[in-house]
Image 1 (cartoon, rainbow, N blue to C red):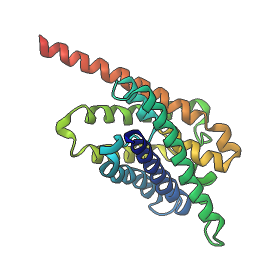
Image 2 (image 1 turned 180 degrees about the vertical axis):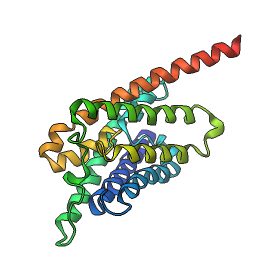
Image 3 (image 1 turned 90 degrees about the vertical axis):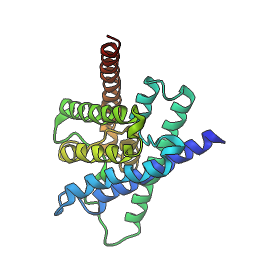
Image 4 (image 1 turned 60 degrees about the horizontal axis):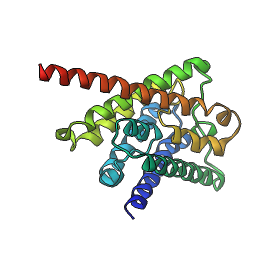
Length: 231
């Protein structure tokens, strides 16, 4: 029952992230006045809200890259790792499905982002898109590892992580739309199809590589600090 609750929490959290974040891009558009910042904050505030609701249930990963980092950092078991990813992808599909449904029922609303807010590397090129996603995910995961490894920061962890997601979106939106989250990319891409589906692999591989690098660097720095403390 505990695992079911965890997976349900991850499903709901990812659904909210995609529906609110991608929905903001679709219904408002990043090019509208203040749209760029509005979309960035929509993603960030989704994390803040969910962190304080499901954080004590599942840890509020709502992102396969975060779950991979926690697996590598030995804070998540292999069974829960796959359970989390399955729930996250399903949640992203549900969130994107809701956006698509709302659009299909309206004669006024249009998809201002294109491809239901999917991530694309059209502005950066293939290599540039991979670099952007690796770097932004590295920053995001690095902060998560730092703030969650210190129990004294527990009360503000959700805010710090949400604001970090916001600022990586601020720079990443005009580049790739900012993924840093394979589930967030998979959901809209499956409903949008076409170019979004063809390019989605970049937004799966890039964030996972960024997460692996973040864990490696974080563990290296932590071991250095331990060594200095012993000395």
